[in-house]
Amino acid sequence: MASFPRFLTAAIILTILFFVSPSNSTSRGPLLNHQLTYKENTGFRVSLTHVDSGANFTTFERLQRAMKRGNNRLNQLNGLMASSDDLSSLVYPGNGEFLMNLSIGTPPTEFIAIMDTGSDLIWTQCRPCQNCYDQSTPIFDPQGSSSFLKLSCYSHQCGELPSSVCRSDGCEYTYTYGDYSSTQGIMATETFTFGNISVANLGFGCGEDNQGNGFTQGTGLVGFGRGPLSLVSQLREPAFSYCFTSIYSMQTSTLLVGPLALNSIGTNVSRQKTTPIYTNPSRSSLYYIHLQGITVGTVSLPIERSSLAIRSDGSGGMIIDSGTTVTYLENSVFDLVKAEFINQVKFKVDDSGVTGFDLCFVVPNGTLYIQVPRLVFHFEDADVEFPANNYMQADSTLGLMCLIMDGSNGLSIFGNLMQQNIMVVHDLNKETISFIPTQCDKIRS
Image 1 (spheres, rainbow, N blue to C red):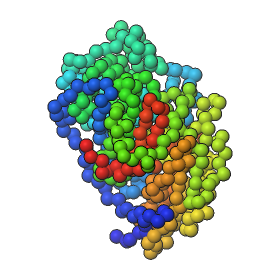
Image 2: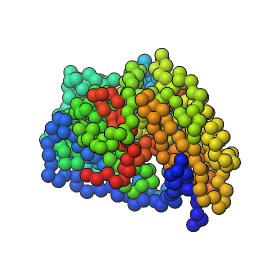
Image 3: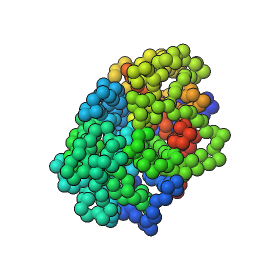
Image 4: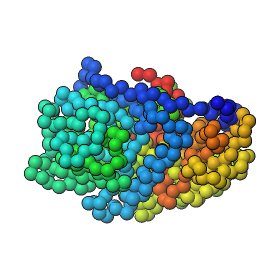
């Protein structure tokens, strides 16, 4: 295998990895061991697995798959605005990037859910299914659980749904996602188990009619959004945090819920960068943060702040999202970023379009090192500098190096690739998000 260059940012040498397909390290065995009852404000820890973990994809195949999912999600999020006046057609961001193992019912039935900070509802497929897609674990059967309880149309959980129908046997929900995948079923409460922590009476959707291709990598979804039906809202926990390993890593990522998330800051207070969370009434479930500027190398880009602000009609602004890999910037901002990288990277721009990425450079044979311009996002009160591998990736076979970002006509998204090896702490009481540089594959229980 031919050698390939290494990235240099400032005085740090970062090796460009030849990514070898990892084996799937996710356990499919029993989840329970000395089950404990959940107590409010105690918290718990869950391991997360990337959706492409264990698959035999090259570096750029993984990124191209992620870009496709990201484009779908961006379109879905932008589609929220078009549907905001019609609850019956309201769409939610679909798909996802990280999976979590948990269990439902008494006795517990294991299932694999998508972890999603862009939506609220917790749901899984349930018997009897009118339509259910194939899943690797048994479909949950409510009749086999002693803790299953249907919710009435007068329950507060039913009242929190954007769209519901009152059936003779309870409250029926329908969620339609932006790729036209959907879940429909009955609202209920049930006992969920995360690791060895058992949580009773969580409201969730028992999906009896689930259609489309948006969720086939999981068997349901756990929403971590800001709405009242999300997991963290129902638990009334003060915080959650996650630390994403590289999407090419064989190691799982870490999700912490409750005080454990705040404790994850530990002794790293001096390296912590904290920015406020903002609310957009048009998309109240999403976590908005204010990106005020961008530095490439030593150049502060002449960005109009209005281009990254939430507009009067609810469009625009920037969200931080676990379910989108690529970072998307409003087109005028992305054009400035792209032009400055072209100005500073001393390689020929590739115009073949073979990768599907907007900006790639041809790396000459025999190149051992590449001086990659530093990249800093200036959030409100928080200047965050990223490792080069979080925004620039190379492929040794193609001889190309690409900027893993893209433009957006409206909403900007701070995606999970740029969040790699950063502990991201959502403090829900203070309404802040903190960023702490962390070697995420070194986190231990």
